[in-house]
Image 1 (cartoon, rainbow, N blue to C red):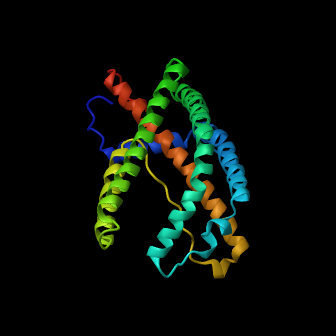
Image 2 (image 1 turned 45 degrees about the vertical axis):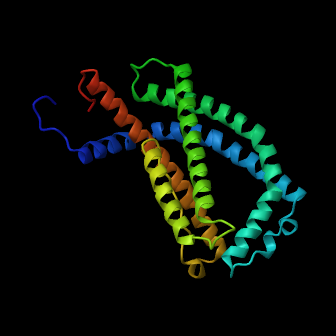
Image 3 (image 1 turned 120 degrees about the vertical axis):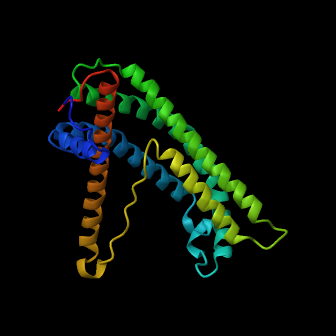
Length: 249
């Protein structure tokens, strides 16, 4: 309200979280469009990976004989295995990445457009503009990921050479520095959620632990979608303030 003390950032965030939590249909829309793309995509990846492994079994590539006691030998073994799998993976990515990117841009744009319309009914549906924005986001992500890979390759070539003793410490420092730098840049648009294994398999048993892992995975995915909606709601409120209107209560 006018004349009231300005809200702190944490107060505003808690308010938006409560607003979204009271409207579960918004999170349901976010979950629906993400899983509508994610589940078929993961299924296709699984099927294609099985075809690659059938054509080139892990034992034929040397993956079953990795030396865990010697990281240098294991690194060479992994490099040799990658050289065998690389043509198969490149052939797969040549058609899978463009198709997946196109489907993701359309599905995410329609899902986000519907979500914004439900969140703020006064907004006009603009799915084509949203597709363009999602394409730009995806292009930025791929560019950032590519630059990170190239930087890691540079660090490896600068610190690990056949003519001298490998500088493992220097390589590790560069990997940490570059990874943190690129993660900081990308964190402006997204974040990474990691799910760590639970350390009580003896008490629960393997079957029960699989159920816990599945439940934890679903919880983190739904929670991530929920906070995506919260962030979107915050952006809408900032847009209203910028346009000179008071935020909705």
